[in-house]
Length: 118
Image 1 (cartoon, rainbow, N blue to C red):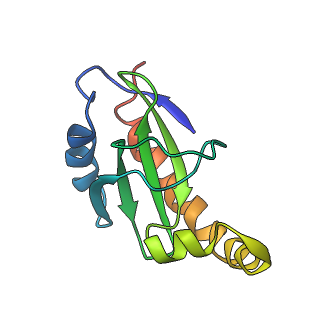
Image 2 (image 1 turned 45 degrees about the vertical axis):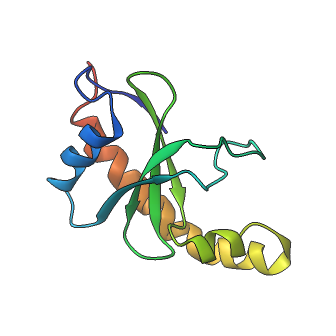
């Protein structure tokens, strides 16, 4: 899910402030530890906005360009995130929790539509 936002929402802090007025979910800027876009390597020092509903259900917002963001469903918990990376057990756990993650990502995307560039 990719959205082009209005120019004034060109930082994670501004998006975080906006989302905190829209939802009771926890919004925090964290180092990016989630492999979400098919790349198998994380970028050191990269930050993202994490919207957390629970340890297993959340969304990650990251910048692709100055006003273009991508929203991904994630497991905000570092433990659950690493547990869903490899093996058969990981596939089972991911299948169980992915519905909640997708719902949170869609909710965040709907909020960001309000600040989307027309």
